[in-house]
Structures are given as C-alpha cells and as structure tokens.
Image 1 (cartoon, one colour):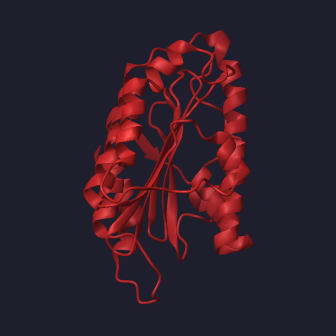
Image 2: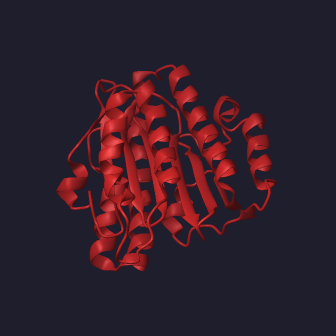
Length: 265
C-alpha cells in the first residue's frame, strides 16, 4: 500500500502545482480519490512501477502524465495504467490469463469546477461470448450489478453520456458500461469506489482457470488490448494532435505486446 501511494503521489505531484498556463488540471480531491482507488488494487495485489511510460515519452506531458505498474509477484495482472489528462484521471486494471475476472476500466472527469463524469466498465474476456456462460453473468454481471447500474442513472443531476466516437472502444465495451455525467463529487466518489471494490473483491475471490483455457484468454486479451489502443489513438489524436495524441495513447494503454503473466504450460 505504501509503495502504491508513493508511486501515485510521485506521478500526481506536478498536477497539484498552480497552473500559470491556463490549462485545466484535476483538483486535489480528485487526485486524492485516484490515489485511493490505486491503493485498493495495490493492497490486494502489491504493485511496482515500471519504466514503460518513460520509454514511450508519456510519463509527463503538458496535459498530465501516466504510469504503468506491474505486480511485485506476478499472479493476477498484466498491469495497471494510472493517468491524468487535463481534468480527467483514470485507473485501468488489465488482468492476466490465469483468472477469468473482467478487466476494469475506470475514469473520472471534472468540469465546471464542481461537476463530475464517471466512466467504468468490466470488460468481458475469453473465447465464450458474453451471455453464453450463465456462471459468468452471475459472477460479474448479475442482478446486483444491474441494479447498481440503474441506481447510478437515477442520482441527482445524473445524465447519460454519449458512447465513444471510436468504433474500437465500443467493441471493447460490455453491456455494463456506465457513463454518467452531471454528478456531485460525493456521488462520483461513491460510484468509483463501489466499482473498484467490486473488481478487487472479484479478483480476490477468483479461482485460477484450467491451464488448457489460458491460451484462449491470451488470444482474446491481445485483441482486446489492440482494440483499446486503437481507440485511445483515435480519441487522443483527435484532441491533442497526431504526435502527442499517439504518445498519450501508448502510455495510457500500457505494453500491448508484452508476455502475459501467470500463463499455463
């Protein structure tokens, strides 16, 4: 936990400084929330910072920065992406093939000084299409999650945000994708925390899948991350231009071609 907090604060310290250039940056309370969300993962799956973002040039840029973490003792994860971009923060957790737990995507955006958007998703994995395996629906997309999703849309001021303009991002998304705007900070904080708590609890309770199935998870995860990267490129190039947008996309996605941890023989 302490290591994760130190890594997070090291990443975030520049954004806490007053901005003299007029650019928008996350507020202190949003940065604190990001650190807490990262710590929830690191408490369950101890993390260590890698040099991926430094190598691709996206660890620090004029609109924010990114960091990529791996597990200290590889077991559950491919890695964790922690980033800031303007007034947006994110913590994306990518699973390895030893477990069938969905990948977790979590992003919070601040605007107009006191309103917040929350985007979170549990990305389905493996060769079996979502809906074909009742046990998967029960574990990760059950009635409790459906009711949670419905409840989020009924919060005070809540508005449904439009789907991503990127086809590749939409391919990756699950039916449980939550994109809610117009929230007070307390509601945004609660939704983000509940999402992260559900993911961590799911990973902590998961049993390893048989080694013979891990190849199909590898193949599907490779494709998911490739689609996600293409979506990041489209979105960030549109906003920041080809050069910086491509760097931000590579940093926020993490190593796409890396070997997955925990693979079976």
